Image (cartoon, rainbow, N blue to C red; front, side, top):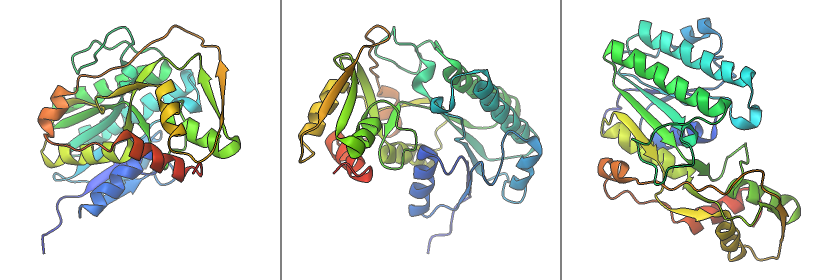
Length: 289
């Protein structure tokens, strides 16, 4: 029997992505120690003492905790996210760990440059995006000072079972279909976005961990589609008719497309979940099938 490898500690293990990563690693035989806000309040520096018995020089520490945009785009949520990052950074500075992984967001990029790569200049457009970028750079500074391997993952829009937020797109569409057989669309749904299935995010993160990758990676499928296209795909899946209500858009039409060459080189041959399959699983999980 293969001996278990070093443990992976996940801060934010009850979240959509953190939970999927924890489950993925566990299936692969990795010892996972998960914490959520209920077991470890990262806004309180003394709370991180709970990690002392499980963190060591072989440990991988995954920082996946954050207040998401649905919790508010304001100074209070910005400060909460920044406080969590500073406390984690201080802990890592004082306690030896093997490596650190930060789950960031593609929200740090603007919408004026396409395709997006890891070298695309950042342009945080709100408190959430600004917090994610600041947190990422905070950990980067500490890692550089300590000689600590750091893997930063800027994740694009995640869809799939288990999402508690229902951000605009596949998850929100599935939730509203289950509720009243309607879908809300901004404008004509022309905007193109890259949507990545939650299990693919977990498998990519796991693969990068196994390869001891460091540095910055955008986690995206490399395929962008419009919201109108997503609704047409849903029509081909569900066995009923539904109503699309259109809401005037608040801003200009923007797109988000990725060049995933760096990711492809790091995980050659990775098989992404076909969008229609992931969408079907999402609809079923929300009770829309």
